[in-house]
Length: 140
Image (cartoon, rainbow, N blue to C red; front, side, top):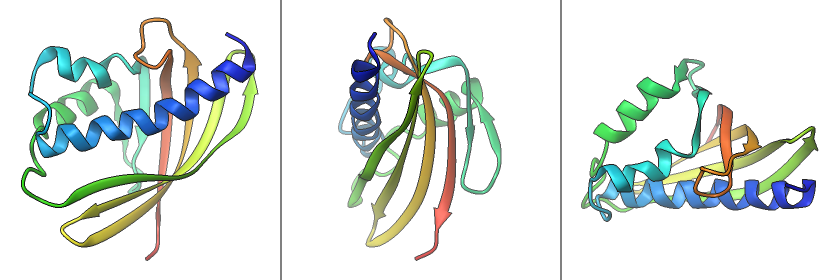
């Protein structure tokens, strides 16, 4: 994959995975193994998330929590908006991106700044896999 294609696929993946999260959390997509594969196949086997509170979550526990959260926002006005996604670096088959994630739930808005590392992955839905994600709260 060329650097340009990796960069484009990375930016698309950020938006598309968060779109999936909205349908998953609101229950607008059925809870099924095939449906959940969208997120499971996007996270690399060694994926690590550092959440906004500084806790480290590995792929397995994170996937279990996400799977259990299906429909947890059903009936609520819930939205996620990705703002200012930007490729910071593409080198040696890796892409580093940053973006702001804004979540609106029941009238409240939270914001977090994220940095994410990606690599090409033929089996991932968007052609790239999430390797690492670091999130930091943005004060209101």
